[in-house]
Structure formats: C-alpha cells, structure tokens
Image (cartoon, rainbow, N blue to C red; front, side, top):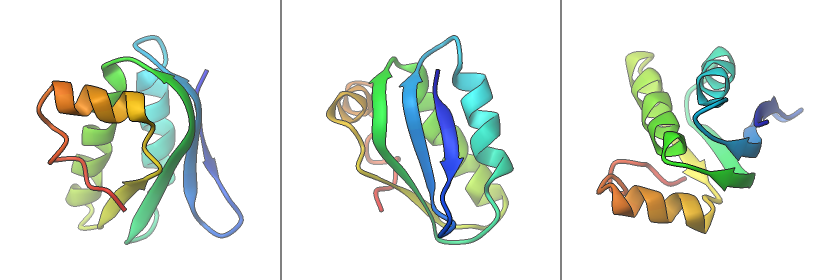
Length: 96
C-alpha cells in the first residue's frame, strides 16, 4: 500500500507501491495535502508501479494547475519514468 507523507518541513513524499487497487486513495491523499505553491513531491520511496501511477502524476499536476500552484516531481524511479515514456507523456510530467 502506498501512502503520501507530509514531512516536518512541508515537503510531500510518496512511499510504497502504486497500482490500480490503491491509486484513487493515493491521489486523494496527495490532493488533501496540496496547501502551498512550488510543491515538490519526492518519489524516491516508491517501490513498484503500474500504469495507474502515470495517471496519478498527471492528475496531481492538473489539480495543482486548478489551484494556480506550481509543482514538480523529484527522484522519479526509473520504472515510472519508463512508463511515462512508453505512453508518450514524459514531457508533460514536470520534474523538480
């Protein structure tokens, strides 16, 4: 199970496996913590992904845009980067 964690310094990180079974919950957890501009979400602790993780990143970016916030992703795992390239959306996913 994946979890979105807010650190003491206000940064978000995602930990665990993201898949079709839990992606909706992870998306909601993340959006609930979108409380400031220039948000960076650290993905270093993501262990496994399927294609639903790509949609999660895109949805988070759309939500940040709706709130007029800038955001990006740091430490994207290679397997997630590969899926984004496979689906032709890697240029749409903003790196921090």
